[in-house]
Figure 1: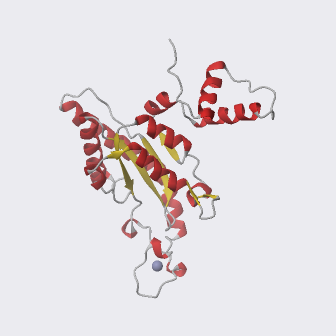
Figure 2 (figure 1 turned 135 degrees about the vertical axis):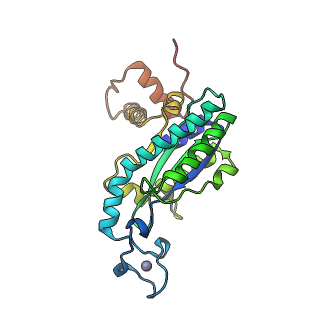
Figure 3 (figure 1 turned 60 degrees about the horizontal axis):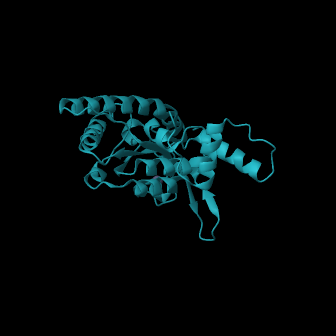
Length: 247
Ligand SMILES: [Zn+2]
């Protein structure tokens, strides 16, 4: 959550968050009617607690990462080309993405595109246009392009994405979502290197921040970090911006 938040905040501008769903029954993600709790004849829906057949879900989940990489690459190539045709010197990319386990038992993907500059807006529109066309070929479902019409400050997207990973219960305790506890998916989130270079907030630097914390509280004798890593860790720990790296 921290990595997502700090990096989306480091982007700072207007952005849009979109969701790419898993496909439906036509591709083979059929419902397991034995697990339905509603009346016979009613339409199945993950929100009613219906689950996709486990073997079908496993197969699709297993394959979805590679298919996403392919789809993302194709859409990026298309969008880069269109932006270049308009005379912009700009190569785009998704700022952040995050997998979420849907109630029906398959993964879907939330991603954020920057929409601050004209070139970014063209890139985002073309990227999503290509995705709507190519997603069936890569075994994905649907992507709604509506969020592109009303870009939001990036911090809003950060807040939404955080909710998919964990939420506060009414009694003030913290609950990690099923997305995080589900096995078999090591990389739940991705952050563009353009952003991590600015924020210095990566899983590695956050781990270093915990080491520095342990040192400051006397749990360990020496953090054994190089000076730059230690500086970044201290900044993350104190929630201060990391200074620009000198020449
Ligand atoms: Zn059902």
